[in-house]
Length: 314
Image 1 (cartoon, helix red, strand yellow):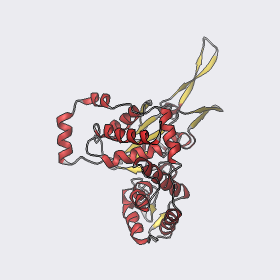
Image 2 (cartoon, one colour; image 1 turned 135 degrees about the vertical axis):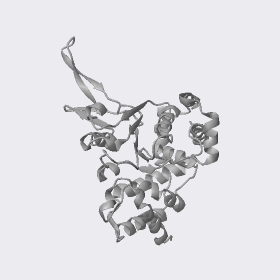
Image 3 (tube, one colour; image 1 turned 180 degrees about the vertical axis):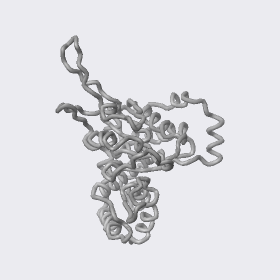
Image 4 (cartoon, helix red, strand yellow; image 1 turned 90 degrees about the horizontal axis):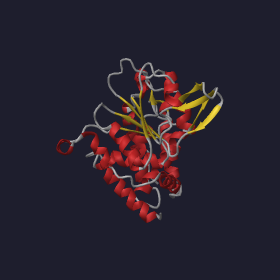
């Protein structure tokens, strides 16, 4: 498949998802950019706005498998990655894969599980593999975790630690639809059958090829300089206690390449960097004071906007 055909299919893919998630073209575009950048997505939102629908529709659109993990206080790591079961007939242990072995995994209400269970995702998200009893198991490729957490009602929850939040390439919020979009939702809603309207436009191999093509998108030297200046300004900000790590800078670079690829652009521009900074950095920053590590991320939005205004463009 040539690049022109891929560009056409990517446009159709976005249009197909917009038929299911109505009125959220920007969030759909960022979700696809996260996938093409080979990253994971954190969705922070109230219940009922379409988070599960978006994840399952994305899996269907790329011809991949989908699984959903409902995180609760009694969830165990083995409930995520799987366990070894003794088979009497063979007198041997058999590994039964957990729901993490899917192309798109929805980790629903991740902050409701205890830290030990949350940490079971770390190796999978970072290394695309899991280890059980010294046995190593590779995950499906492509592999993407879409985790959700409710920004309100933190009773009985465990806020994500910094190391966990840093594993997510992006944090976005779907939010409520505007009145026109909500009217469209009401007029066309027919439940789970909506998902069957999503076309499988790509194969998994084609998605992997797109991820490789994303890495070939050119980044001009002045864009590298701009990212470096943004990072320096953030690390020296008087209100910041936990600044962005090099992983955050790399994530911003990767996501900008993916967004440029989605928009059929040949190279990354500074405008793309400025557009992506809130989604890539908002959940990685910790502010000074007791409220800085709430895990919500929303309280740091003003920092990104201030940094973007403060740092000059050469």
